[in-house]
Each structure stands twice: as C-alpha cells, then as structure tokens.
Image 1 (cartoon, rainbow, N blue to C red):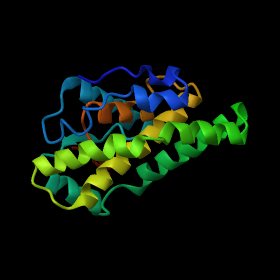
Image 2: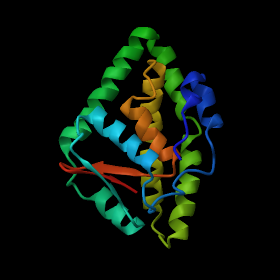
Image 3: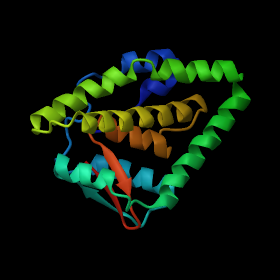
Image 4: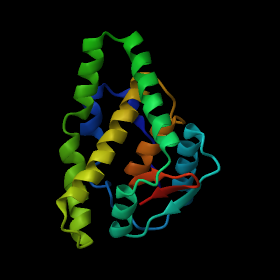
Length: 186
C-alpha cells in the first residue's frame, strides 16, 4: 500500500527525519498493486503520457539495463525538468532566494544516508556487488525527494506528479524511466 504524504505540511528540515527508514527499495521486483498503478497513472498524467503502460521490472539486472540505456523518451525527461524549474520559480516568488535554498538544503540533508543504506542492502540481498548501482538507486530517490520538496514548498496537492512519484519510492519502488510507450517501475 502506498502511504499518504503528510510530510509536505512539515518544515523542510523535519521531512527527512519523519520519513520511514525501512521502506526504501523493499518491494522492487514484485508485481505492482492497484494503488501503485494509480500512483503511476497520476505521474504519467502529469507528464502528459497517459497512453503509456506501466511495466513492472522484475530484477536488478533488468533495472540496471533499463537505467543505463538511452531509450527513454527525452520529451518526458524534459517535462520533469520544466516542471522543476516552474516550481522553483514559483517558490522564489514566495521566499527569498536564501530562504528557499536553505529550505531545499535542509530537506536534502540526511537523504544520502536515508536512501543509500537500504539500496545497498537490497542490492546485497539480490547478489549485486556493484556499489554504483546502489548509489544510482539512492540518487534517484534523493532526486524524487527534491522534486517532492519543490511541490510541497509551493503548496501543490498530493495529486501532483512529483508527489505520486515520491509515493512510489515510499512504497519500496524505483521508478526507472518512461519510453514512448511504457513507464518502467522496479
């Protein structure tokens, strides 16, 4: 089950300490549930990719292969970047530059450890010895937290695509990439 996100109502420096510690990457490779599929649909709607199918990735090897290939759709990657910039610009109208950067820095403080340790454990359990893979998974989760933080700072609803994407991480998943026809989730 995908948890709700009460964290957006907390000051940025309190979000990471309030996050659960043992959920990250604990559902990778298992079939997606109905609620997770709903989160995928919310995320895809935000990207303008409602025609894409949500595909479960079954193994770390497959996840690495997908994450390292360049077959993802640049249009959707750029859509995320544009939304990040839009949210940052909106946040900059609500906060001074120093206050905004401080809020984002406080949000990200401690996230490296929060995500890397569980990613390393999940890789180890799967027999994956390449530490770069755990760092890649942890980095993706940290990026999603940053995106969620921007959505939260600007008062976006839990229907926002970045909130949906972060809830997939909270559900123990790793959203990998969107191609022209599919959204791959590990």
